[in-house]
Length: 458
Ligand code: URP
Ligand code: ZN
Ligand code: ZN
Image 1 (cartoon, protein in one colour):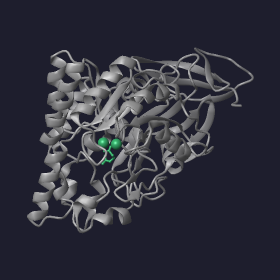
Image 2 (cartoon, protein in one colour; image 1 turned 90 degrees about the vertical axis):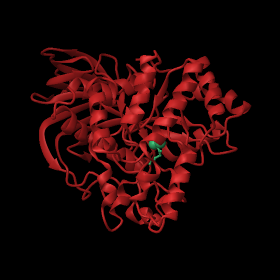
Image 3 (cartoon, protein in one colour; image 1 turned 90 degrees about the horizontal axis):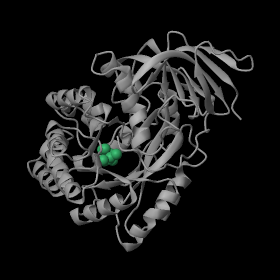
Image 4 (tube, protein in one colour; image 1 turned 135 degrees about the vertical axis):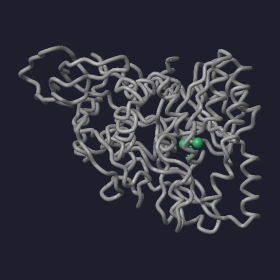
């Protein structure tokens, strides 16, 4: 059982403001918040000068995932260690149904991968690839198992057709679930990739050329057309481009409810990385690809305007040896990059300190909104009496340069190498337990599976 702690004098951040107060933690929960709380039985932690965030939630990770004839470098053990060390107290990973599989089998497989080895709390979205009468029947069972959000791909081998998207959205409308969709036009991508190869370009530089922003925008438009007919909200995951955002903006103007997620890589990095020599561009091969500076600026403006709902990482990591599976053909480079441990520092540095968002917005994008949308609020996503004591004591003055050395990922590179960041999760509490300090995990493997309720519409 967790001890009693009194976190004293920190500036408690919420999605709507902040206040300086003390937090009394008991039995894994926040018992009391107030000024000058006195409790002789609690261990006192002086947090003056520190920001106190609700534990960050990363609603988009891929740990222990088989892709492109290999498996991600990070599994749930290493991935959640990196998460908690950086202040992310809960991740939502994508359990994935492969063809001919039941959703219950996929969920059991993901529990087997994650149960007992996680250092942050964890939950699962369910990626559906084989929709039929049985799958439809299983949605009830998914809800009972705490899975209330689903993922569809419009590209890759596990993509679903427009008709299936329609059927699944209808089901979601009936049951109150939410679907996140990877939007890219699969056929167009395949044709363009083929043309790059016919023209003799097999290098990472051909990757973004085969996946232009219009391929994302077209798929978003198609998805939003289907969602409009069904009349149900949807989530666009890892939004990367201005063209894509314009589709969202137009749909919202028509009165549609559309949620958007973007990721640090689309806000901070850009497509110039694909021009790096010696196969270095492969480090940044992810889908959708990194975009232009103009796309980045558009996404930041959307963040400023409150038009982006969540920032997640899409952590999907591979070593350079794995990336080299595509040394002779860019379409064989496993897609994805790490980020789960870096997100809070990156967003604090580029977002808050560069006046693109307030600390309250950071709280909403990294904690409160994912908790609400994915059915964990107010248990998680806020610092409130009765909530899980998932707490990040944030030192705003800390400075470091990101490097792969000593990182908790199992990759041999960090896509943000050399970037100077500020702020640090100095102490992290998970359900009342101190589990990480100054980037080190002090108490591993204490993560619990979080059964989620239906999400709240924000
Ligand atoms: O390149 C990426 N993003 N890989 C992870 C799978 C996905 O598309 O989300
Ligand atoms: Zn995706
Ligand atoms: Zn993803």
